[in-house]
Image (cartoon, rainbow, N blue to C red):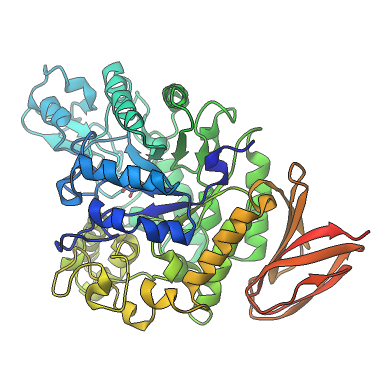
Amino acid sequence: MLAWWQKAVFYQIYPRSFADSNGDGISDFPGMTARLDYLQDLGIDAVWLSPHYPSPQFDCGYDISDYEDVAPEYGTLDDFKRFLDEAHRRNIRVILDLVLNHTSHEHPWFLESRSSRDNPKRDWYIWRDGKDGGPPNNWYSIFGGSAWEYDPTTDQYYYHFFLKEQPDLNWRNPEVKKAMFDVVRFWLDMGVDGFRLDAVSTIFEDPEMPDHPVQFTQLDLYKALLALRGEEKERAAYLRAQREELFKYQRDMPEVHELMQELRSVVDEYPDRVLVGESDQIAFYGDGTNELHLVFNFPLMRTDRLTPAWVRANQRERLAALPPGAWPCNTLGNHDSPRVISHFGDGEHDAEWARICLALMLTLKGTPFLYYGEEIGMTDLPLQDIGQFRDMLGVRAYHAFVQEMGMSHEEALAIANQVGRDKCRTPMQWANAPNAGFSPAGVQTWLPVNPNYTQGVNVQDQLDDPDSLLNFYRRMLRLRRETPALIAGEYEPLHEDAEDYLAFLRHSEADGQTCLVVLNMSDRSHRLHFDLEATRARCLFSSRTREGTVDDLTELFIAPFEVYIAELTHRI
Ligand code: GLC
């Protein structure tokens, strides 16, 4: 028997950008609650909410100043509970974002910690003396600049892997663990269905704190973070490899696995909850039963072009590397990465690529995570003016490029748009109405609305159009729900040399069902030959008009960018 989170399709909501009910330009829980019918109708099973806690918003909510409350701009704790209950009433589960690595610098724990060297919470964060008039060592923050911030009140430095407004907690202090596990219980007691664990790899750092050996400029760091498009390939590979070296003392310390095991036992005290890890590391599955239930398959999305060969290689490696009992988890987009169409579209067949991407997510083995707005084909919105940026990562990169490199504002803006993540966090586009129906007319939304809502990229127009992307999502989500092999089946690649299309079987012994999936990721048609005589293929889904059943599946014609899914049975 599979658990709910193995069968579920997750949908990520960025709580600032989903639905604004009170006209302040920011989404809120009453607005999100009012849209639950939409989500139910879309056919998703669970929601992952990016942080909804009070926060001074230096990192768009990932800098939390109170873990047991709701940001006032999103509503009250009661509004949250109503959202949760209403979601549950529609059989939609809700998981929250849990940020363990750091708090906001405005969190009362940190305010206490920084107040004096002998404050009882001093050791809740990582404080060190400086060295030779500078920081304790040469570590970088992944968001740029030193990982150390000098605090004149106590004449010491504190450590931050992310922004200086996000001081790292000291997880070697048992009081920190206890306080955070209380937070976990607080939400589980309220009935939330689990957590997406933010930045798990960086929870511990090397206690010896040795200098890293890399000669890197600030600019190199930004380039390595991005592996900038247009950067010469070899140079990009070099920068990426150097980046691994650069942060080797700051992440993936072995203790984190003990911590995850403890966290898992806390969560296991509650029936049917799930932990999803934001990490590249398969190690976070533990032995497959004792750490996280799911770990994102990020390598799949780390490419500029999705090709059949890329997907096959990813599946081959990833599925083979999973420990027994571990369940895969796939995604192609989230609040940190470009939107699916902007990332994988070719500018010419974007509508087709949007469909291929969804079909891939819903037919590969594993739990899919979709990102809000993907279902209507929302695209990245590059910002025109640095004053519009809300993501400090973009803002700081911009200033670094202008000041250190003497780049022009236009060039720096272009890079800031690449590094920054505002572009994929713009308001949800509900209708062809002012502010895309997200906020009332005339309201200044927290990030600009993408003007392409007037060109059909909105929910209302697409609901009425049977051929829209939104209706494609609804059909495919329904199909997946009704087709056990697509959920539970083993993945078996076919035609492994095919350059243009991906073909595979999903076979579920327990359900007695086998499906054939063919995704043509090219603008060429193909005639496929199968060594599957006496096999009957009943077409379950095609992105083209296609009739019923083929006896003797020996040959199959696939149109450009076609998504074809059939149930195979033996002909007697
Ligand atoms: C994770 C989040 C990202 C955030 C960072 C620091 O990577 O996904 O948005 O900036 O953690 O909390």
